[in-house]
Image (cartoon, rainbow, N blue to C red):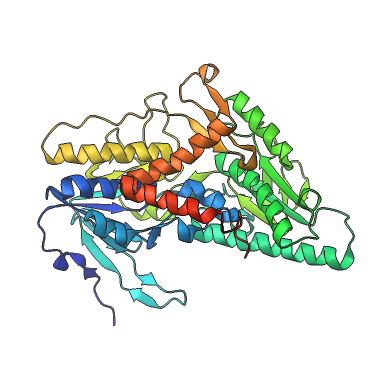
Length: 452
């Protein structure tokens, strides 16, 4: 027997303007917290946050979770605790469909690890709907990529990679202990895409290999036995940044023993190798795809919502969808026009953060009947972690030759500051400081990476 979806309005008892935010990533959680602390506290609106996971982990740190440098269990934010602290509602589940005429969002059922239903499908009425569902890996229809290459979209993906990495090192260490013959690298990891994610992952992997060799796998020489390739189809790493940043990053990666391969388009990914456009076959125990993103596939099912070629929702400069001003979208899932060019803003955490700040003010103005200006992005620059080699930072601006380049300890400090800024935005000063202090105090009692 099929039951009608549960309507969540019954337990609310509120006739306030309801703002439903789908997606609790860096932008969505920040927006829910800010709105709850402003218009929610003044009883001008009711705020509801929806996410398929029960906890939030800052996506720019996924490469650290994947290499074991950061344990997500110690760095996540519980949505229910955040909701209680700031006064919004949290609903777990994934967006299924939107009835734009009735202003109802369908939220899918929540299942356990065995596929049994924990929560049924539900429905939520909205007055304003905000889509902040992030992005997924774009495999660009490369044969075998979706089947054999690992994405790095969430904590689950990071944990899958970390376990595969440890398993590959354990097997190689055992072979070296028993045979003792070194004919070629025992572990081969190919990272496809030399944007910020690929560069940061490759750099962090070199330190992880060193630590695993020191603690667990003494027969494994990380410099001779672990091959880390960073493969880029373009002519240089970090192609979106200044050539000077690119050159310095490539040099730092090579010093870390990362094999940088540029001008190599991937034509096929296999279970144990990949094939380049020139026909070269590269051995691979693990292949990671970090070569592009797109909007989640389910966005295609939202009838009447215009998408671009990358499956992102096309929005106006006020972040409203075309044809329905009650639905907003921002962050990686949105194609927001760029004032500096004829294209769209890039899918970056910085963009999502500024858009969340903008929407927090815009909703307050809209609810008060005041005019709302359009969103303007102000590029604060880009910082990329190079692991043990430090970091590199490029200031924002439309003229690369005038950009300020900062490397080493100063850039590393800026990189750490970004996470602290995120914590301040979603947790407030007291909780952010206590969290950072607790992490600092615990550093001396545990190894630099997770070892199991």
